[in-house]
Image (cartoon, rainbow, N blue to C red; front, top):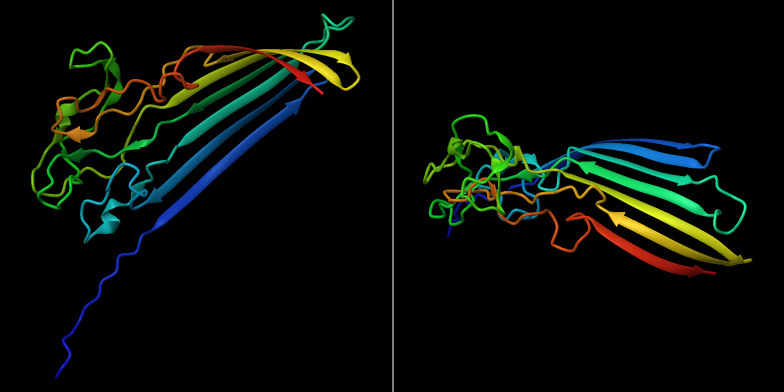
Length: 251
C-alpha cells in the first residue's frame, strides 16, 4: 500500500534586541555625588508571549506580525544624586543628607484590533487605517470626567470586517512615565556602632500623572480613551504624591 505524501510545515519565531546604555557618574569633594544614565532599547519579535493577548493575525504569515515587542521602551532616562550638607559642630547639625531619583521613560507599544472573530476564530485582526494616527491628551469624547482622550483622531481606524488589516503590529506608542522621588535623612550618632536615623521620603514629589494605556478595540465606543486612569493601581508609588516618615536604629 503506497504511503501518501505528507507535507509538514513549521513556523519559526524570531526576535532581536539592541540597546545602548550610557552612564555618567561624578563625586565632588563638597559632598555632592550624582549619576546620570540614558538607555536606548529596541526589541522586535513576532509575538510577546501574549502580553496583549494573541497578537498574530495571519498564522500562515507569522513574519507579517514582526514589530516592536509589547515590553519595548525606546528610551529611559534616570538621574540620581546625593548631597551631604556641610553642617558640623554638634549632633543637631551633623548627618543631614538630601537625595533624589528622577525616572523618565517612553511608553509601550499598543496593538489595535477589531472585534471580528469569525475570520480567524479569535479577535486578533488588526484594523485598516486611513491616515496618520495622532496621539496626545485631551478631554475624553465620551464626556466622562475621569477619562482622557489619547487617540485624537479615532475615525482613521476602520473595521474592515473579515479581512486582514493594514495597520502594523505595535506601531503606535502609549503614554510614557515620569517620576521624581526625594528623601531627606538625618543620621545622629549615639555612640560607636549605633546611629539613630530620621528619614522623610516624598514619592512622586511633583505629583505627576502617569496615565494607563487607552482602549485599543476598534468598534468600541471608547476607542482611544484612557478609562483605567493611572499606570499603577491606587496606593502604589507612581500614582500620586506620597510622603513617608520613618525612624531607624542602625547598629
